[in-house]
Structures are given as structure tokens and as C-alpha cells.
Image 1 (cartoon, rainbow, N blue to C red):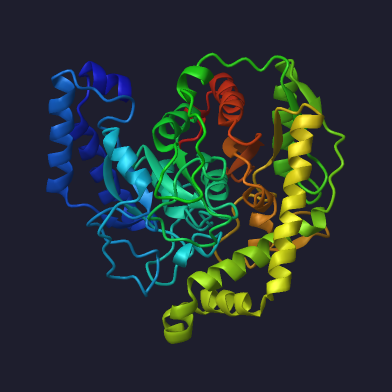
Image 2 (cartoon, rainbow, N blue to C red; image 1 turned 120 degrees about the horizontal axis):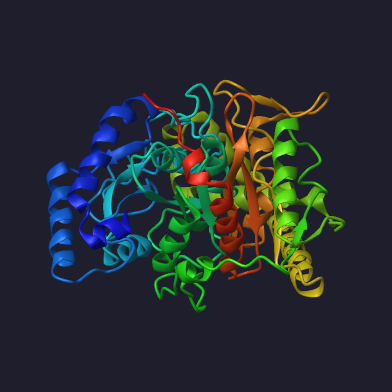
Length: 465
């Protein structure tokens, strides 16, 4: 689309028209959006983009491209509910830094996407605005909390969406909806003017239809931001140029079976090991005998930090307006109050030790990337409280969906989920590729090479009517 816009084959106003038409038809079914910007305003922006491009002021790959944002990311003058009752009528007076970067690149914000209340969930269910629906099967979960973003991209309502990820909120819905979800290194994309869930775990990222698109978005979204104390001042390379000449030969890619593959749904296991075979066929060195330490600490340490920090964020509201939260989120915040300072500090120390183990894997064993399944089960049904992943293994839905992602939020490592196939019931399955800090080009290159060979953009298009 970028090339066609640049060449004048298609106009931004035509793209906006297509997006709005799809939203009008599909959103009543899929419930991906909370707010859609007024039509006249969108066409005004599109016409400005057309004029700039026709006068030779083309800004790059995002110019004239419609996008959406998770309704926790602020855009000036656009209602930002965070999927909550408390912020139903809140309208930010300034935009998130990442939104400003998108607009500077010429992208056109079309609306805000549905999410779990205050991003406090992995399911995509929301009691106040309705739940986002998986476009492959509306009886199944979209995943969350960036569920509306994944649904909007999967269904073709927008070409990309910005989301946030605290425990798997980008990579999990991307996997369940058959799209690409990129969670860059902690601090790579500014979280300024994004309502926080747990500040030491919160990442900003994107959901796209293709790996190239994710690379293009990251090029414009990444970079140091003086308004964000967690923002990293690292060089941002031209990801699209790097991945367009992917060369996997000689890469050392570790397959982490311990913990990550202990409780896999049989169909996911089959697809995952087919992906591993693909890596072997590309003459990469695959190492699968790495022993991990303290895997039993992954969930508990993440949970303590996530609950304690979320409760601190919401402390005034939970004390004064507890009845305005859903029972599920209210209970999470109450649990956060029960976490002692000692437990919180111990969890921070544990996470630091886990991160050191992963960093040593990259440096001492010369590992370039890690691959693990994105989720251990395909999208559960909306009413499922538990997930069966084997004859004798039954897990709570939340625990099952979070299992393979939380540690990469705790450690802040970059991760991308890409679709690799379908279950027998035609539900998409994803694989997660994880890299060293600020080496997104490595995981993008691996993902892009697979995407080119396997024609993923053609395969993962839900049949919506």
C-alpha cells in the first residue's frame, strides 16, 4: 500500500474509505473499536496527506496509512477510556509520544481499540464495552489485553495498530488472531502518555499483518524520549533495509523446551516443531539442550510485581471508587494490597537473576535468538475457565495463555509472535522469537525470512462475511 500511495495508484482517502467501510460492516460483529474518529476529520487528514505526496513531500512508508491505537494510549482530543467505567468520558489534552511519532510520519489515526479493563487481562473480555471477538471464530477468545488491536488488524479494518504488553498483551492476541505482534525491548518505544498497568513491566509495541509492516512501524515508533524516564537512548537502525536481505546462515537459535514446551497442546507441538525443522533447513544452528534455572519462579515473581505496581497506580481510585471496577479487576487490586514490600523486593531481585541467566545465554553461549511457542494452547472458547493441553494437564485459561510470555516482560527482552499454521479446527497458532536487548533486527529477520518462504500474508486471512 505504501508503494501504491507513493506511486499514485491509490490515495489515502481511498484507504480511509475502505477502512471505514470494513469497520461499519465488521465491527458490530467483532467489537474491535471503542471510538472511531469522525469521518469528515479522517478525510481532511487524508486529503492533506494526498496533497503533500502529490507535491513531492512523501514522508515514508507510513504516509497516508490508516492505523488504530489501544484505548489506553492517549491521543489529544480523542476519548481514552482504558476500557473502564472510571475513565468513560476522559479526553486527553496531549498525545502519547508514540502517537505523535506516527502522525509525524504521516499515518492517519482512525480510532481506538477495545481492551481488557485497564489492560488487566489476557482474554479480550470487557464487561463495560463488550468483548472483542476472534475473527476466525467468534465463539473463541481474541486474547488481550490488546485484543481489539489484534482483531482490527486481522479483519483488515486497519493496516496496523499500536498496543501495550505487560505480560503477553501483544504477543498472545497476535497468536490467537493470526497476525504479527511485536513487543520490542523495554524502553525501545516510549510509554509517555500511555496509562500504566505495571510500570517496570509495561512495553509499547505494534500489531501488523506482516513482519515487514512491523519493522516499518518500529522504525518510526522507536527512539529516545525525554518525557519518558524508562526510554532508552539506543541507536535505531533501518529495520526494513536490514530484513529485506535476510541471512539466517550461521545464526545460533536456541529452542527452549524446558518449561515452554512442558505442557503443549498436541497440535501446537506439531506446528512448533515443523517451524524448528524450517530453521534447520535454513542451515541455522539449533540448540535444544539448554537447561533453565528457576522456571518455577517465572510466574510468581511476575505476578507479585504486576499486582503490586497496578495497585499502586490505582490506589486512590480503589480506596474511593472500588464499586466502579469490575469484580475481576477489583479483586486483582485487592490482591495487590496484600503483597508485602519484602515480597515485592524479592520478586524484583528474582527477575534480575532470571534476566541475567537469559543475557548469559546470549553472550556466553553465543545464542542469537530463542524460539518458543507463543501460547501453549489455541484460542479457548469464550466461556472456558480452564484449558486442557494434555490427557492429564488442565490449567486455568489465564495461566495457560500467559505461561510462555510473562518472562519476556519481566526480563524486558524483545519478542515477536508470528503465525505458523492452523489447528484442525482452523484456529491460528503462533511462534515467539526472542532476541537480545535492542536487537530487534535479528528477530525481525528470522520472522521475515519465514514469512517470505511460507507466504504467511496469503494464508492468514480470516473468511469474514
